[in-house]
Length: 292
Image: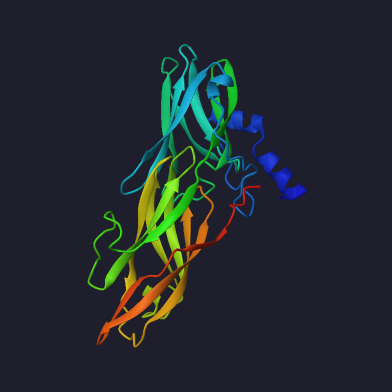
């Protein structure tokens, strides 16, 4: 848990009057509001209460994931008729402005991107509680807004075990796949897989590697995340043996998942060694994202 100094600093960062004044004036100077760990002051992972229960000017908020070259999450706001709201802004749990939309008094819809692939935690909506700011000529309303995503690792599969795994980029560079499910209420972005002592590292002078993913996983969806070239052939396999690799899956919102996977090396012919998965993976830790 954070100490009193951190709590006081965070409270100063997200002072409501400062936020409303900044939004109304045009520039919210909140950069650097997060603490040295890049953490939020709230870890509530429960679904957000309906915004319509909080204010009569906001009817609904939805989060829509967009896959593609740069995965992102878009927030869409439905305002009440005659609400006369002209600005919709979002402050994340670190006290930083994520984005805002300017609309005319006659409009009842607004939207903007709340998370992009490559955004730092301070730049995107945060897991847990955020604050929505609604401003009109005679209206200043702040609404608590909860974001919740959670990736669960179900299995690790080899190149012949799942139809969605891509073809190898070249011979002897087979992929593996991580089957994950988003059990949270909102989209998540699988960012990368960090590997220690993986088979693909035996022929290189290094012990760790990082594979970029950038794959959107919608709420309730189960998908396979390909880790390319992971089963790189070792041409010096004289006898059957096994090797353990430690992998960590990181995403934009979920806690990192670290697990151990065993790989089997089997000599097939001269100068050729087949590498395959050996048994189920073992979750060794799920590091809770520090958001206190």
